[in-house]
Every structure is written in C-alpha cells, then in structure tokens.
Image (tube, rainbow, N blue to C red; front, side):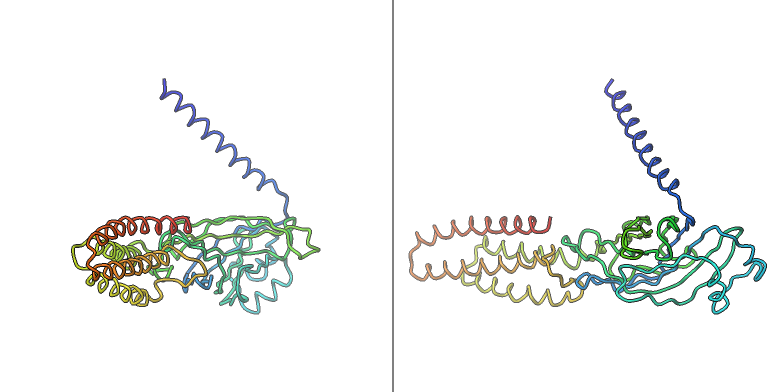
Length: 343
C-alpha cells in the first residue's frame, strides 16, 4: 500500500512539474514579437579567471538566426556567405539584431562577421573576444562553484521588435581536441536562458531581451585536496599533537615556533593558487586557524615552562590539564567560527 501511495505522489509531482514547464514555455512562445532570434553561443577559450579581481576573458562565437524576406539576398548573392564591406552595405538595407555585452569591462573586439541565408532565415555569425566582470564570491574556495556568466543585451529593438530564443551554449567545437577552460578549473554545468529587462533606452519604460549564459566551474578537486587542504590540515593536526606529546615544554615551544615560520612560508609557496579576496574564504580561514593554534600553543608552553622553573609540580599538573582542555576547546571554537563565516 505504501508503494502505491509513493507512486501516486511521484506521478503527481511529475505531472505538476511538466504542466508548469509547458505553461512557461507556452507563455514565451505566445509572446508577440516581430523577430524571434534563435541564438547559439560557443566558447572557444575561457581564460585568465581571476576571483580576487572578479573578472575573466573569453573568445566566443555567436550565431543569430531569424526569419525575414530573404529573396533580395538570394537574387544578389545566391547561395554564398558574405562578409566585410559587402555585408556591411547590405545590412544597412535590412533589419538585423544588434547587441552589446552588459557585463563587459570594455567593448568587445570583433574578429570577423558573416551573413548567410538558409531558406527563409538569415544567419548572422560573429566571432569576438571580450573581458568580462563577474561576482567572484567563492567563500568555500577551493570548493564550491564559480558562475562565469555572460550577458548579451539586445538594443536594436525592444521585446516587441525582437526576442532572443536560446538554442544552445557549447564549450569548444566537437571536432577539436583542446582545453577550453584554462587554469585549475573544470566544468560543472552550463545553461543558456533569456530574460526581459527594462532599460533606460527608449525612455526607460520598455523591456529588452537579454541572453544569459552561465558556465559554472569548480576548482580542480585533486589540486585543492593535494596541494592545499592536506598540507594545511597536517599542520593543524601536528600543532595539536605536539601539545599531547611527552616532550618537554621547551621542546614544545621550539616546535610551535618552527610551525609559525612554516605556515607563512607555505602560504607564500602556493602563490597564485590562492586568490586574494576581500573576504575570508575556506583556505584563508584554515591558514588563520593553523597560525592561531600554533601561536596559542606556544604561549601556553612558555607559561607552563616558566612555572616548571619554579619547581611547583602541583601547579604544573593543574596547568597542564587545563591547557589540554583549553587547546582542544579553542581548536573546536576556531573551526566553528570558520564554518559560520564560510557557510
């Protein structure tokens, strides 16, 4: 009986989800516009990803296709692809979609553009490169995902004139074998969607079509664990275990001070593997925990070593037990504070 109820619940959820998606799709298709521009975006290169500066660079290809009167094109050029001055002159005679990239740090550099006709549709192709700004919020670094988004905004007509219809977003050509996303990053997910946003253009009351691509990447987990997390956790564990070892307090002081020199040296050795951000990410927090723990343990060892010099063994035993509890509590407290700051 329980299986039947579960099946009914799953079936109801599936029907409701499908109906919602179909309703949304129907709304988009029924929106009246003169030109429904099918859009496909392909990334040739994604590189110079900089979290601290909140920017990255791309080399991309953009294909726009829309229905219109193509007989004039065919009579002039036949079944050919035009470009250069010939294309510019022809495009002055027809309506065509124009766009800018709203999160670009400077105007895009167009490598080349071509215009073609397939049946009753124009196909306008452009290859360009551009510097983009992003929200580099990645507090769980080196874990978590980073949204490398690109906003393409139409300006040759409001939504009554044209609307982007997202077709696909591609990472590299299928017949080439090269790494598109440069650096220590791997692709997590990708999506291409359309939004209608108001603009100050045309009086500030009309909406324009925006094409949004989201390339979600994550730091290479092997590098994150092997180069950053394991050495850092080893330093934290080693600093903690020194306090529970049977060595003398003078040796403990020497070892903790040695760790205090190793931690910043390790931070320096990682260099560009750790981004410089205005907030504390997970990696920064672990460095702070390791440094604070070694410093706190060194202070306690110095204090107890001073008591040892007085020969008061009873006081040494009390302080030793108290320091053991205190160091464990402080370590846990550090991790709680770090977790609350990151999550």
